[in-house]
Image 1 (cartoon, rainbow, N blue to C red):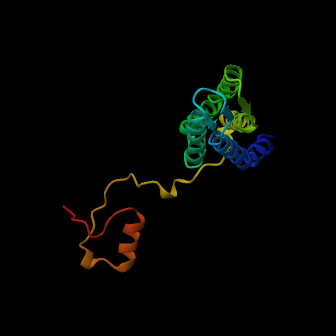
Image 2 (cartoon, rainbow, N blue to C red):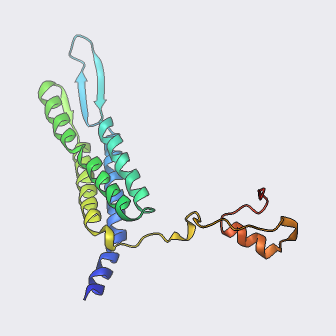
Image 3 (spheres, helix red, strand yellow):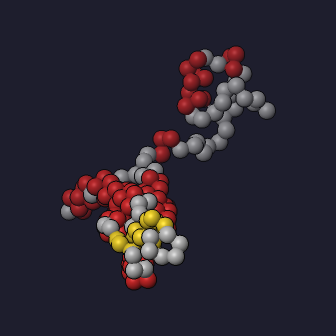
Amino acid sequence: MAEPRRSGARRAFWPTVLLGAAGAGLAAYAGAHHWITLDTRESFTPVEQTGLDSPATTALALVSLAAWGVFLVTRGWVRRALAVLAAVAALAPIPTVWTTRHDLLADHAGATANGWPWVALVGCVIAVAAAVVAVLQAPQWPEMGSKYDAPTGPVVTRRPVQEQSSLELWKSLDEGQDPTSDQD
């Protein structure tokens, strides 16, 4: 009975990772656009229009996006910690949407808002939801194999390179050893 649940959790791996990365990427993209436009042509120092974006949203969303990338190549508790980091980094910009939009629109008469703060909010919510799923289901998800891990065994004494066959040389390279290194 545990096997069907495990396979269901495995099926959720790629959709969750892709949604988390897409949500973080969407938030980063939206954070790099102008959220508020200030028209100050009628003030004492006339400026045509200036746009205000949210560098904090962009930076935190990129942290979340990077955490999703590293999430793919980790195992165990590190994977779960990265999912928590992705959630926190995606959750942190959410107050920025309200603060930036509400405070600037209230303080400046010529301020107009567009939809980018809401796009950032949607991206953050998607990334947070995916990260919560990842924290809960990470133990059941597939992990990268240990095939490419650095070997951690006793060092085998080898014969000089001239005495080894080409097969032995290739095997030592596969094991992560340099057959040409000094054998002191």
